[in-house]
Amino acid sequence: LRIFGPKIRVYVKPPLLKGGWNILGTQLFVTRTGVLSVILSIVLMIALYLLVRRTTLGRAMRAVAEDKDTAALMGIDVDQVIVRTFAIGSLLAGAAGVMLGFHNSQVNATMGFIPGIKAFTAAVLGGIGNVPGAMFGGLVLGLAESLGPTVLNIPSQYKDVIAFALLVLVLVFRPTGLLGEVLSGKRA
Image 1 (cartoon, rainbow, N blue to C red):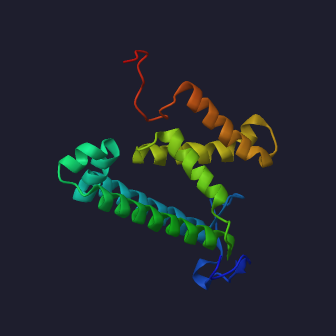
Image 2 (image 1 turned 135 degrees about the vertical axis):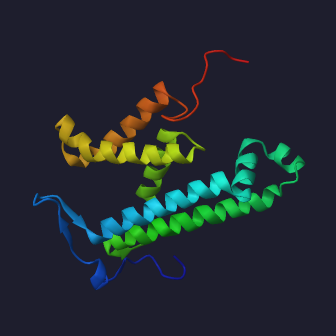
Image 3 (image 1 turned 30 degrees about the vertical axis):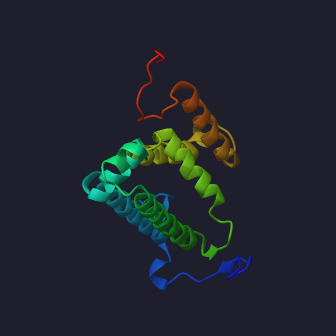
């Protein structure tokens, strides 16, 4: 805000990103920015999954997430792992902001608020700390928002209500998320 101010910045899409395609002659229109966003999202999701599952940093991230003290005892620099994790998260948030800016042809200081809430909702739906679960949660959330108003025969303005009602249902019946661990009824 201090550098760019609170004003909305509108920009013209590059010619390569203008337009799109009708799918199979129907009224379903897919924009080039939409296709680019999907491709970039898939590449980033695969990269994040591989980073978390197949690298030393990913192993350290999982260890710190599980138990900071034990990770420190095993020789992991916990503070450095946390800094790198936040840097990766910031990089991914920046990529999401660029994709959202391409989609809307404008950027402003508050444009990420609702998508951020939706991303958190997707992570909770899939299971916190579970990268494939967050991906699945995002897919479920997107389908619920897209198809929910049609299936329930309600105005499309209620798509956010559908998303958060789904979140409440999952939290009530499956508190660890759709792909999270099943909690046993026994208490320690």
